[in-house]
Image (cartoon, rainbow, N blue to C red; front, side):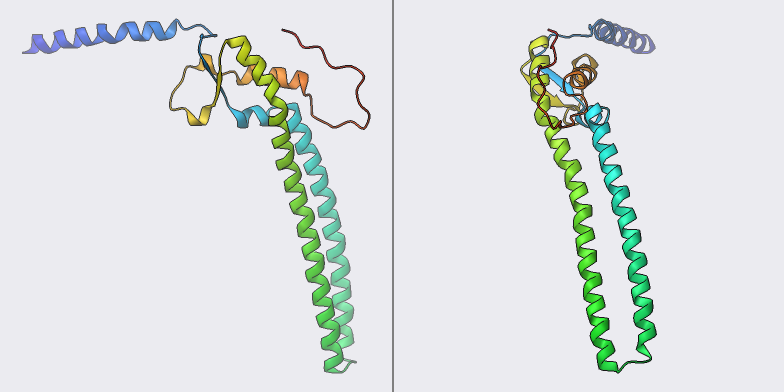
Length: 194
């Protein structure tokens, strides 16, 4: 019985050994109709995304400074209003207080809209990045003889040789750069190496 278990164990180890050797011999460019990208990493590490983050942070800083200034002005106005309370009729004070509250709500709404615009800007730029990335992905599909691009998050398991995120990032950074929209059209297009 013990000899049989040892024999089965030896046969099983021989059975699985070739699979491990074959997996280790896979080249870095496996011919496959499928390539894989990590879209979040691709975007986050791109020059395009770095520019968007810088612009978003600059816009947030301006909004924060504006909010601080508005808060200081409103606090001063509220203080003056509170001081007037002792010298005014209750109905007159209530009218001023209600008008002040309405102004505060309106200002809050305007500032909230500005914050949403900053968020939308970042979302729209991300969408634009992936729209402008299509020719880059088509180029890599052609290079690899592939016909489908899959997102790494949606695959259960795959060979790392199918992952073209680094290659895509290098080409995207070269062709798209930071994605800043210039005021004047460029005279020449960047050269594309094949």
